[in-house]
Image (cartoon, rainbow, N blue to C red; front, side, top):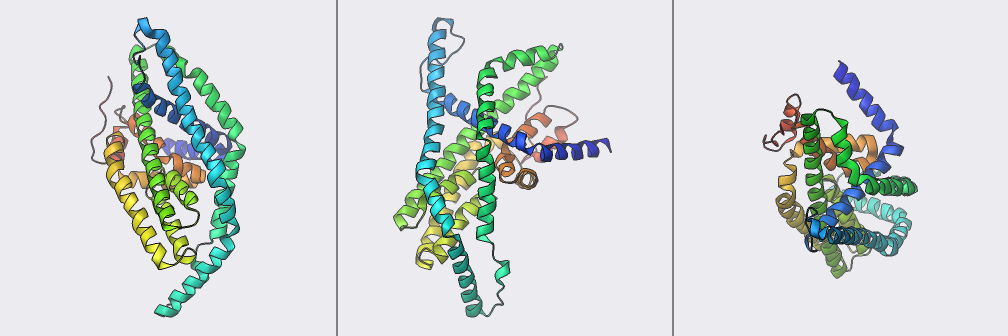
Length: 346
């Protein structure tokens, strides 16, 4: 009974604390992503060993260079969005009512051709969906100042995290246990975020090249959606592929364009999402597909689009943490794909 009440209380806190927690999770995500990219930049720079006292100063210098290169990479993506993709979004938004009417007309045509009773109310309200997404993005944009403040403090204090953990517990065994859990989460999360970003970027770039070659309008928007929605398991990929296919079918030239668009985008998802993604991130995750989907729905209901975006990283942290305690290892077993979970740290 106490566990149920604690779970209900937790959901209430997550729901009420959305204005504070979502910007914090965005800040942590960007902080992790910058550190993850920096760790890979660091591999191609000299003086990789921080314990080498002879080159300690040079290591700090090149470590700073790697971090700056990582921030520049993220900044370049943001600039690309603001200068290239955002104007296309504005233009596409103005066309939504016309696209909705064309969708209704296409449904009417299909109903007459196949003798099916057609009810326009069953069609998705594209304008309404776009308004909700735009509202969510606007809410996130208004909290950008809070996100930057969180990130600034995370970067300032990341060097003191280990010392704080060491002084939190008088029992060395507990301190080592917590250090092991946090190090495991940190290592796996950085690998996951870097690989996922790399795969998402490759999917978006290849999608853009394919759609531009076919002459489909708003190729930049569809490519950006392929990049962003690829972070959301299964549902994100379906939406990212479905929207340009539907647009090509009803407003972009009909079946002659829609068929190659569908073949290209679905092919990219098979190559990057079904073949490369499991190979590159499978060892990191080892999570049940059902657990991922249920977790996606849960966080989507609580935090909306932001919750779906963060659902997998949160699940990875829960999976690693629950595997470290005898009382919760059964949870990690249920979350795992094959019942094999990480070893405990003694």
